[in-house]
Amino acid sequence: MTSYAIMSPDMLQIGDQFDQFQIQAHLAQGGMSDIYRAFDMMNRREVALKVPDHSIMGDPAQYERFQRELEVMKTLHHPAILRGLGSGKHNRIPYLVTDFVDGQSLRQLIESSAPMSPEKAISIICKIADGMAHCHDNGVIHRDLKPENILVTADGQPVIMDFGLALTKGAHRVTYSNLSATMGTPDYMAPEQVEGKRGDARTDVYALGTILYELLAGKTPFTGDNNLAVMAMHLNGVAPRLDRERPGISSQIAALVARCLHHDPDQRYQDMRALIDALNHPETADLKLLDQVPTPTPMSLFRMQVIRGIAISILLLTTIIVLAFALQALRR
Image (cartoon, rainbow, N blue to C red):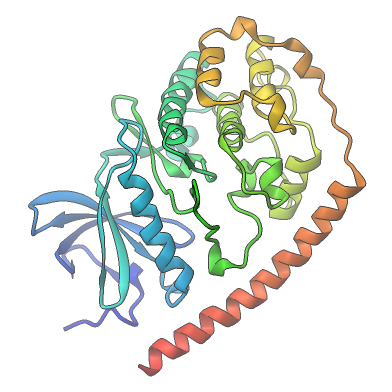
């Protein structure tokens, strides 16, 4: 009998049995987990099974993150939100069970279809925004919206997933090894996330504006040689005007996106319903936003130096902690 206690979950093969689930296919691999299509033999249904990558096994924060993700999904009931079905542990390996969604990631759709027509892009973003409005109504801030965390079905329905970094009312911060001060994915991080703040609904508005920019331009607004460079651009840079990056895009839509990407959260759309209304009536967009030119402040530059130091420290400390837990697991 195979022991999965010290075995990499990415070694699961088609036909393997993992607890009550029979593996049917490997669907995706992220930085910290693998997702499989599986058959739930107890409940006789097809599901998606999320299993942590072996590289983070032994990290106690990840156990909490998995449990927290399920608890968050249990509070949400919306066509644009992935439904959580349960969780468990098999030979000390935690896992999450969700609905299986037959579709492709928004990342795959971008790679095959971007830049998209404004009509198609706005349709997708409005549906995502509606799902996010439901999240915010229930006190859930996603904080890691990105194309990889959104599935799109054959009939065009987006489904938001991966609530591992979500913030809920009254919840304490859970990070990788509880050491990281910043949350999210650099390409889609709002300036306040770069500064280590918790964020709110307007943080998700910023991320969704970044995704809309990418759908329309075929690229994200900020690029850099490394993650820190991209984070610095979010903090101090100005996104290139969308109507200049993509000829044919109206200045009204460009201004709408610019408002989503405003450095100051108070100047963005304050909630997802306001964003949906703006997307349905782009003619109301304030064209003055196209001329915003924020100036980097000494404090912003200082914060980037601090973040760089924190990042190096986190890398070293995380490596030590993960190795320690791995050695402890092997000795058992």
